[in-house]
Length: 342
Image 1 (tube, rainbow, N blue to C red):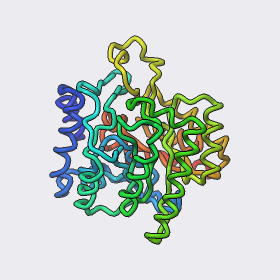
Image 2 (image 1 turned 45 degrees about the horizontal axis):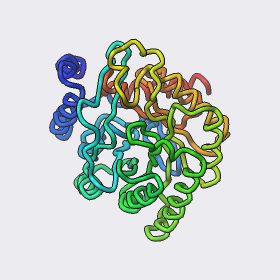
Image 3 (image 1 turned 45 degrees about the vertical axis):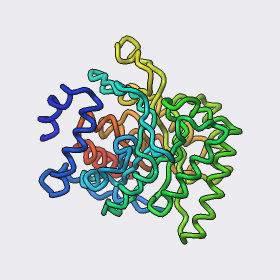
């Protein structure tokens, strides 16, 4: 209810300003228990060897710098993913870089991995008291060539390892030049081999093995899905997150904001994202868990992702349009779908 009242005021602001203001304003009242989202019911699930209180999580990108973890945790998420973080701080692309397609319940963003860098990011996490399931999404700096990208990912993995419940390897953002080329077979095999080897050495050092998840694009062909699934299986990757934002403008071509460069998220990519998710489910046959993200703005959308093969789902753009009540709605709908199918 409170979000419904605040939304017109927030939507009157520039999209990125509203995004930042929402997070800043959320911190104080949520921290002191003055504002709470509808409580999500318990729906425990074990995935990647981790125990989640419910299967509905926050996608990376909302809290890029891990500055609002404690506040966001009070909204009822089963897990939170922060980042993308890169080794060195970078400002990202020039503003404006976030655009609303309100009628379509969609966003176009070209942030470009704007973040405070590893040192400040980890300092923010040190100040957080929440100890739920935390995913940390890692990437390369914009000026690191792909030939040296593995160095950036390795630096991130080593630094975030002690704090992460799992680490998401982001090779699918459309807003960093040539990043998606890392999804090609040779490049992906080399990257995953490097990171899995490092993870295994870190596991020996810290006495626990942190799962690695690969975040993929919704713009993959069936052949690319099969190829990436084979790499995931070959390198013992623990999960696939399907999907990131899309460069397609199918269904919104006529909107002025759709002409902006960047990744499209929200309702228009739901079908495309779910199709890629189902493709990975068919290829991996239950051997590797899947996280469904892309276009979820109703509980039924979350249940659809689960039916397509997801073990967990994540929200981002749907929260912008629906508010935090969407979290509990998704948990309830997934629970009811399970009961109906039992």
